Image (tube, rainbow, N blue to C red; front, side, top):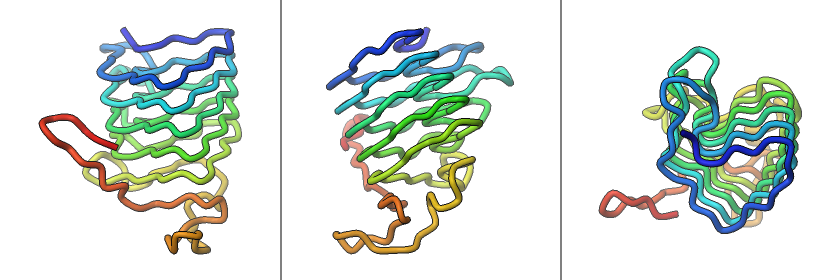
Length: 178
């Protein structure tokens, strides 16, 4: 059973750790499943979650459908989609706002946008090819991920101030530190 299911609601999720959940063989949204909702997710870690192995199952960390969540200061790390689609986030017919987040090392792409408008800014997106596809983001505005400027820290970034560098997560005793 997945971590959190949100349906036709607008909860605030703050300072949570949503870890080690699985949808088993069938099901999308291992960490969070959101349908027809407008959640606020802040200062939260979503990691080590997985979704089903059936052709329609996506979103190891988050599955968004007809939703408009706002994510701030959230880490979406080491989640898995067995279908290799949207290991971190799978978005369909939704308009998420994602600001100052880390989306990294998810198996099956970091963020897959099937439909809807994703607003991704001031975030770090990194996909080690060992964890799935070489593309971190799929189906977004072509300017996302197109390195075209330098931010105030001197890091290469796109016009939305997203960086695509390894966040250098530290693992100690089987725990990942962000």
